[in-house]
Length: 244
Image (cartoon, rainbow, N blue to C red):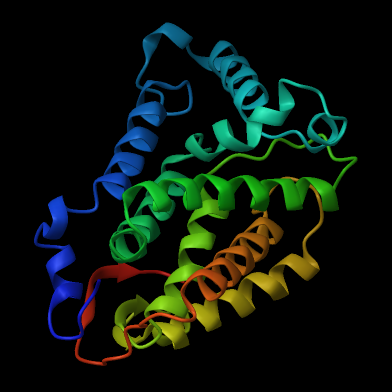
């Protein structure tokens, strides 16, 4: 249980052993990226055209290809899980891990480690599946943990609506400002929704996966925890920064 006086900050001080699943996911994503052909650190993948070919093969093997997934191909059915640990660039990786670090620990503490791990993987799978279903004829590869992390954001919104987070808003000259989580996350969700409506199935950010993941995460938390305690105290705050 999370009390209203200090357990939120206790998450960051190692309460109940700390958010080991969150940290484990971050470590796994970072390690797999470093040893992949995308990081450029592994000389075994060569350079130039050879490296680009290795990257393309890597994405195709472990990422989601909507046409293959929707065809029911057995190997493709696993790719929404493997794609959660594959990232397309350093910026892609670090952005996702920052969001997971800020919002994952408290969500894990509330759900428990095992339930949080299943929630993360299940929400991520459904987010990528939802995108693939909407773009069933696309052959563009989809990778990244964004769908699962969006699910964490959705659950966080329900569980900790008034916890305060530090955010950087471009239109406010990137000034670090602290807001209640519900303002930041609803603002983020609206941006994803608008972007998803304007986006196609080509290369770029899979905003629809964010929308699906966030919705699934929020609905799960609402269905699972609506009869229990929600943390509403303004005094408790998360630590770290998010960039919606």
